[in-house]
Length: 135
Length: 135
Image 1 (cartoon, rainbow over the protein chains, first blue to last red):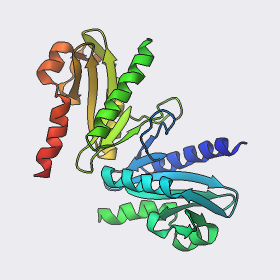
Image 2: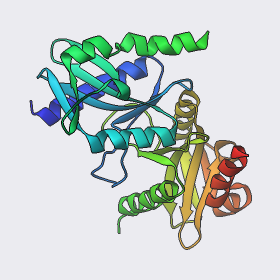
Image 3: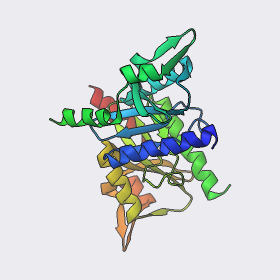
């Protein structure tokens, strides 16, 4: 399966994970149809709104351009959402990483498997954050 | 231009109107790519979040299925957004109609030009609502 095909497949997996956890989900039509920056998906349960860029990788490190991260940050501030990178490592699973916890190397941001395991948050904690806020 | 082409063109017009008014905007990839219901666009300026179905018509009346309206309502409640129908009448312009103000005829909801002019809200008022909330 192509890299793009895998990306779409795992993006769908993530959408269903949120939907099954009682979030409303919008998958963006993407930058092809409109020049305005928007994240891959935006999810909310009325209490927490997350603007999410999704990546599925079979390597141990993924780079992000400064532009990609800055656009996600600007979008989220204006929308009132928490920006997150959702990254899925093959045979390991999903991690959710705050922009403050991205690595930076020369001219690009990155997430390594080690960084994700140390600083990333698992899906259950994302949902858990919501439950704690309800108390 | 086909009805679908016109719809996309006016949806883009609306997206840029919100973007130019300092909203973050996500255009949904639509029901073709995911079976989960989501509105055409979702916009937010951190204070007001609107989940919007966009329609451009060259008639004086537009019908909506109960399913379409119920899905928009359910999505919006869970997301924490205000559901709106944005309807553009040829040579007249955009009106924004709350779900409570839709007409109902036999088995379908509808918006007529008369109803939109009486109960609908103009774009400037949508933006105005935001400015009032800032005070």
